Image 1 (cartoon, helix red, strand yellow):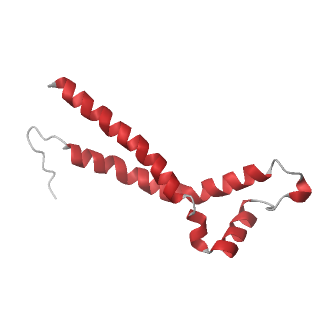
Image 2 (cartoon, one colour):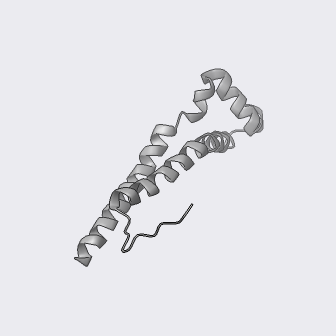
Image 3 (cartoon, helix red, strand yellow):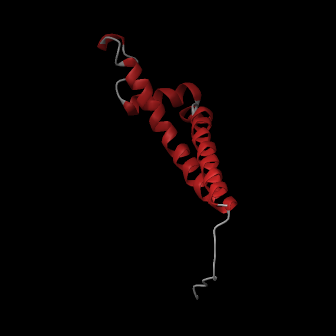
Length: 103
């Protein structure tokens, strides 16, 4: 296969936005279960050892899956995506303002 190089090739704003959004959403999808476990374990660390619900991250994951099913591991996904999207929107607005200032 030949590499094709176009003269004066520029990445459009749409392609740039997709290239920014897809990896961010993928990372969020992968990281949400780990974040959920981290938060649950951090919150219970304020209790005495005898009153703690989870013994560790694997025990915590098993309890969540037993109570809510496998999709329970992604129970905070909507909020995480909303959080990420707010940064994405700010990023797009700043890029647009930079483009507008160049003209």
